[in-house]
Length: 152
Image 1: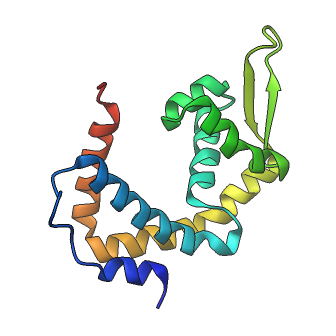
Image 2: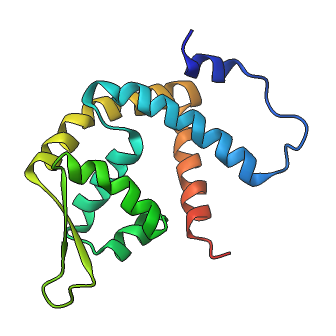
């Protein structure tokens, strides 16, 4: 039985079930494991695909803009970009007008890997929606998007 199947069989939390952070982290780990498992054949983790997708969507964002979009601190973003840069999927170069500002670009290799990963991402997406329900998944995305926009 896979780690993901074990995670799905665990009993729901009863003690301390009111902790939002714990519930969100537990759900995120479970969903990340699902997506990472489906995406393994293309060599990307779900977080890496999210980064590539965000770079494509934003064009050529600065490190600060990308960190803001992904809700990551700059050091975490740098840590996550390193393997993508090492593998030639992104380039991180100083801006022409301000060498302290770094511009992140998707390379042709990164675009190809993003396109290759789409079929695996879609399989994970379909599996999640099959297990959770399409309507529930749509509602969940709406709620999580709202939570992601709150300034605490």
